[in-house]
Length: 376
Image (cartoon, rainbow, N blue to C red):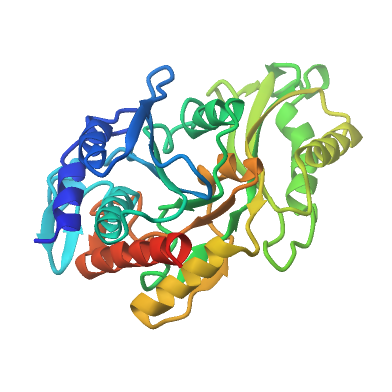
């Protein structure tokens, strides 16, 4: 079996559910130290982070990944145990196969082949790994970047191994992501008996018109890189469970996935204006998960397009769809950031898997990108 497949199987065997790393990073440190990478532990709270760098000159190409995975879900729904890598029908099954231990394995073997052929390449190479991507992402890449920024250690190009591909490996490259702004709102009323609404105030009733307006608001019309901003309600909780009590409050959670046409402050101002217009008695907590980012052009995109075409013979599409990624913490430093990884059809599902041929092709694409950026 190939080096990439064997490495991926070793990673899958380690049950690194967020924020656990389960020894993945230590194993990779040992392997990459043989290639001249110097490792630096940057752990915060219960999150494991590693910064591996080879060379100290510019330009700096960084591979960004996460060793943590989402929980496997109901074990009985898996055809094979989620942390026992299993070959079946030309695919490797296991939690993290596509998101994103497959990319990490492809990073490493691409680097090993590249360095064997080009030990005197220009620039520097780094790998940044965290065990806090699938969680709330407060002690992972965001804090590692703070450390690098304080010492003015700048990334020029960042290749994120998130599963960007749609139908075929390399058919989509994520060149940006929408921002994500979360809100938790409590609307206050007056609890009472349902038979005496005149001496109570039902917060669900007062909320309803405002919520309708929020969900129907045209926040923007998007642009050539991003779809329009969307507000989605994720949770509504209210009531005591009794059928004869008007609740005293109702809690609503909603999220806005916003594009570069808007910013955090503008969204907050417009939301508050709608709520205040309906004279709600409310409290509102905001959490910015990340601002939108975009790499619309540059050497990194050019190298990715060239590599996909050379390895697969196909053209690739630049896209900004999907959720958020740790690239949102890198882009504000001025780095070019793209995401290129496996097909995303099975991610976060039971029986997550990666096609064996795709795994090898991905490693070849990464190697070709290294040549495009650091040799030519």
